[in-house]
Image 1 (cartoon, helix red, strand yellow):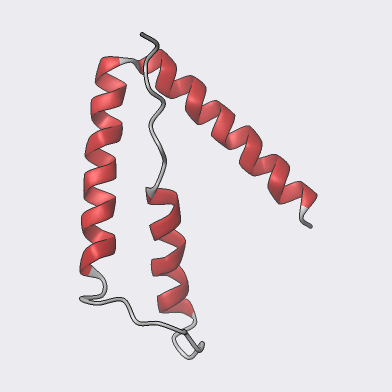
Image 2: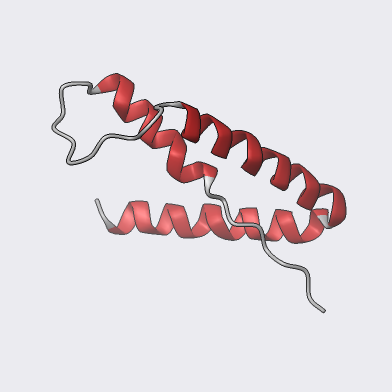
Length: 80
């Protein structure tokens, strides 16, 4: 059975926190209950999962990270 590739969900919650602090006056169509507790819990859980995946299969995690960096860079260049 091939190893599973971890999902980098922490990448989604980090910009949310940054934008919340840098642009507090922006209109937001919803409010996050218990802000920022859910985002902090998600970051801790995902960091723990990443550490576990690194322990189990470092080569797979490094490949997935390299792929993520390449795709993110390509999307960033394509959308400029």
